[in-house]
Length: 177
Ligand code: ATP
Ligand code: MG
Image 1 (cartoon, protein in one colour):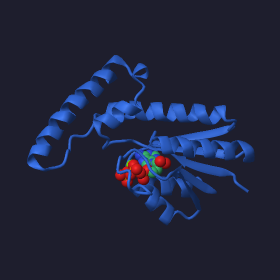
Image 2: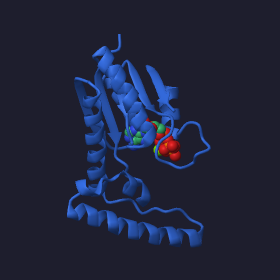
Image 3: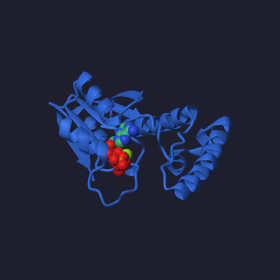
Image 4: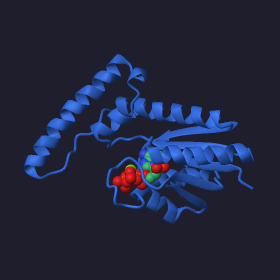
């Protein structure tokens, strides 16, 4: 019996497909959907730009996004010249606002697909650890996630989060292509 399905979303296209499958199963089995998003505290500026619905951001949040893009690209140029990594993190308030948008969209999609019970968790920390802990504490029968996520190393079949979660999960873990 499938009672609880945990679905992890970073807002990526793969995660949307994972949510679609989870919602379909959730509606059919009348299962509870536990949605988890781990705040994108290390996201690149262009990733946040792609994920954000600008209309859904306040003026202050749009300014934060624009200023972060400027800082980020300045750092990219400097790091490129020095052969280093970009270390400038996005503002927390912006990351939280975009997390809210990701979760709102996910909740709407699940409800529209006919899921009756949706529980949402937005957390911070190591995404794989957070997904594994929540799967255990919510007694999930199954975890559904994307095989890949937001990064653009297209060559890899599995991202590092889906790899770690599917290796360590105690329950069935489906990675959606
Ligand atoms: P990597 O991050 O290892 O460079 P990637 O971004 O392509 O590669 P993953 O991060 O492993 O791949 O993403 C695979 C899936 O893991 C996503 O589709 C999503 O279901 C889940 N996931 C990844 N990051 C998060 C997150 N921050 N919060 C919730 N779920 C996540
Ligand atoms: Mg990722």
